[in-house]
Length: 267
Image: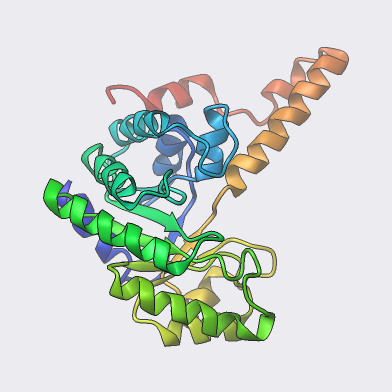
């Protein structure tokens, strides 16, 4: 686990880390098999795969089970989207995150959402204490929703993001996730204004990966994009099958059964 933790930290110092977010052990293993250097979960996809809505509604025990299952199925570092920590109580959040580390995660995402920066800082402090006590090394990637939720006027979003970044860095954050940011000048200003490695989210209008790397971005996440697209495709196929019972579309372009099954042999 220490090797995975070291590797994961190093991946934030070597160009742009691309993360195609998984939602269960099967998707994680599939994504690993096509070249992932690390696996990140999508909170939305993971919640949906368990029959819950996104937004801190997933029972924590379900999260633990999913993380344990994913960690067993892959051989690369795992980072887990822990939403806002599934509690408003910093001590409870600290205990939850430390448990994720014990189950095999070497990184987590923690978001501020529409809460106060001070509340997130209290959670960060509790996480650092709980992980130190448990002997767990976790890369804590803090997500600020200034852009995603429009928490500041357009001309003030860079400043508001950097103000939170300073607070989160001082509270122990290892990375800064700014979903919703797309403008080149804004991205460059955020990267220049913080010592934390900056993570952005695949989003309409976002510059291509090569340009993001030139701007100094260290991490690009697919977020819930893969799971949303696959939900749409599954719904389309099911709809068509119910309509006409045609078998052909179900196998058109499908990954062969033996190839999928082989992904999990001796895992």
